[in-house]
Length: 344
Image 1 (tube, rainbow, N blue to C red):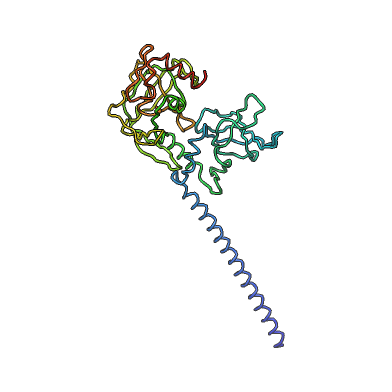
Image 2: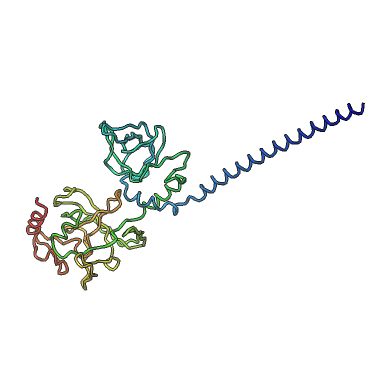
């Protein structure tokens, strides 16, 4: 009898122990699940919170070098007959540049079909097979996938909104030449210019403080510099991309705000006489550099002393400090010089 009671009590006790162990095990698993979930959420929140415009400086160079910045969806990816990867995209959103929403673009890179990408693009490079497709290549080393408002760049996640905020900030910054070089002879001066144009000045603004950025030896410098914006109407150009009637805008900084060095020996250059500012209604020959920002239409004078020459009929008003062109007093003689140098 006692043996039966003992066995029964022991069975009840064992069942209670097993139930308690199972309850403890379930509670432990639940607690562990909460911990892992908390860690996952915390890491995601830290990643999202750590993204600020100041933490994506690498995008500044990409923005500067890009001719357009868009959000686009990959429609297809394929290999060209030569074996290179290409992808066809449809533009969803245009952040900068002259592309339009719905435009089909071809990019020389692999992409996942149906995936959205933030694209920093330069013209050329893709293999387009249709007239309504434009060819581009990516400025960034790899394409930037975007999922649920989060962009992945170099293995790190950034909120798309922070990148766009940084992009908006960069739009208000002028990329200016880091250094101005003075040229001792006409051939060097002409070769250094991106464009040489005969223009009539149509408007000149008052000096306006602008946030300016320059880059030299991989280092970026930002400062506020007064800029005078000169609007030009092209009357003729010497073999450039501009033609009669085109409008250009030139940003001119004060002489004291520019460091000018001799292109030959790199010695500092300065003159007692300050260069005159262009005046509306007058004609000039402008010696221009294009902006480092591929999207900007701004131009800059090659340097404060050789950036423009007053034109009065056929006479060139070459100032004494512009020694490179001292022997060319007329437009005709200057045109002959350019013909000799560039072979027009």
